[in-house]
Length: 197
Image (cartoon, rainbow, N blue to C red; front, side):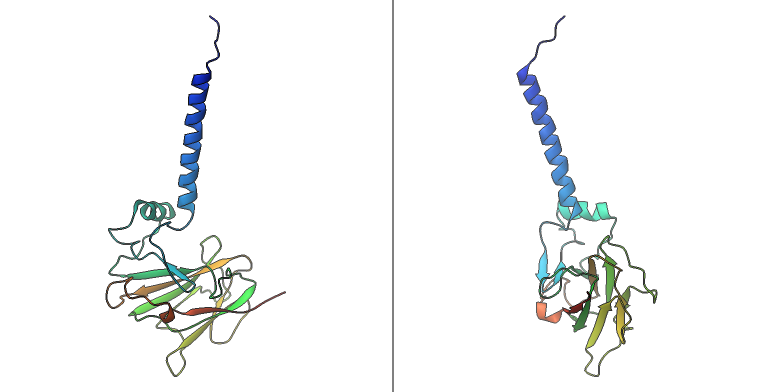
């Protein structure tokens, strides 16, 4: 029995493999980043208000499942992530930043640093976050948090030794529904103070 070359069969196999590769590749690409739909940008902060709700789209649900995260439900609060400063420059651990001086109304908030891999960075003080109840405040109830690799007076969080990082602001028990009536001016500013050599 002799083998006969069938160009149609070869074309079908090629089309199938191409479709499979494109499908798996695009799924991996979408699940690797942030949800592609439903995002809201407030200055340097980005959030997905429907992430913890029943209205979350399939992409959001798949991304949350892949990361193993438990998002805040709509009635619990809101989580916002910043990967850039107010000028749109990527947050880099070789620079020093100042965050302040207001947050939207919430019963409690936390501000946490993550390294480029999404992990809590090691710190000389053993901390990578602040809560609204422990922050040192000015007389007018404003605050400033310094992000730097070297020790700084006041509210200071130590940056990772190198690479990009992100800051996550979580607001708990906000008045009204979480994700409504959000105004960029009510969120902390992230200002780059300077960068080392």
